Image (cartoon, rainbow, N blue to C red):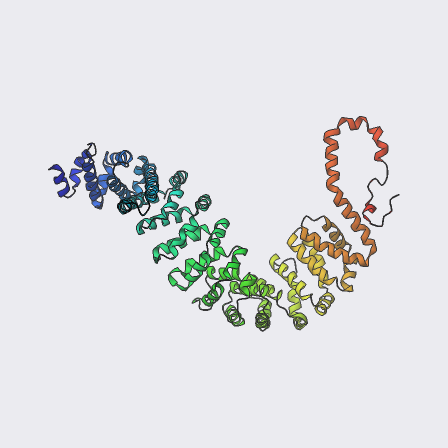
Length: 600
């Protein structure tokens, strides 16, 4: 009779003491009904203040949940639902934390995952031909349905509590990521939303990405690309975006075949922005750009850029385009007509990033049609570079384009223009930004690949500027490498060789570069010295001595340290005995490096 009364009456805030009293009984049905009544009260916002101020309510609910969750699934669902309502309000989180709700909830999740694994293993042992197979299947599905409700409520509570980073950190230590990855295999829509939201939140932290990598979260996400549910797919893309900041994750995403799937989503406006962001992050790896070449990505990206509604292309879209163009396979997929349209838009919009895209196409494409199209814009590029109002960043891109356009002897048309030569000379002056100087040096190297142009540049004392920069920028390996390469171009001509040999300061710098730690610098420097040695035999001896002393420098230092640490006083005592040997001449003779040297 009492149970019928409880079930028939609606919940009343005035009966809260009676409801709590049933939790102290051994009757499980009464506990379930009482928890349902309290849940009804929680659904009314007017009751929340009274409930939270109740001295015993939160403590009783948390205690019963901790003690009884293994005994009744229904009771667990109601109690978790009550706590879920409270967890939606951040001002109540302190009460939940005080009663260790987070720890209890994680214990519940772990218990039900283990319970399912055990039950599923038993079910699989039956086999389809077993007489109880269908009955056991129904029981298993019923358990899954109830567990999905528990997991949904439990994870919703934990997700709300994870607003506090310190609590989130405790959850990570209690293996929350492993639980979430396992629950990705479930089919309940609402549960999957919470799981994906939680994983997306946790995937921001680098430590979590490493654990997700070990839990193979990437292959588990693949099913959501074919589930025909926009919400789940949107959340999946959010997870992919976060984990794509990790290089190991990017590699796993590529191996799982996600790139073609995400590329196809560019056709759907709802997924376009986040898909572009994911693809941009994946395109950061050179080896992954090859995968893009087997899709229509660069074609679709160009189409989106051409029809972009605003003057400047969106930064994510143009960043993806720039990265893709920095791959030979992708660059060669771009047609001459597409290059023309993009270059036209670049000049109209003055979009620096579009010029970056064009520059990368210049660098990585070998198609003559594309080179021909860009050559037709050459005068426009030069005009823009020479304009005083042009921003430095835009000038850098224009100069970079000059460095890769194949003009050959046609460069003379521009070199004979005094304004263009003044532009080059000015860009080599000390008060100019280093990036402009570096790009200009590379452009000079490119121009000097043509013999006639090189002779003309030498006659304009361009080599003098290169040598001055070699001395001024001696501490920057990138500068040194490019300057040495430019000088190398000039040394194919007698005028250049004579100038370098006559400059003692330049020669000292070249000799000192023999000891440079950068392998590329030493390699180019050696080529330069080889050319110069053919014209000046006296230089051969200087180079040989420098290489000899450099080779033996490390050995000499180690021997000095050995003598100082090991011999010590014994060396001083026997100094007179060793003095004769120490004073002998030619113990180590630089000439021994000469293959023609005759030992006596």
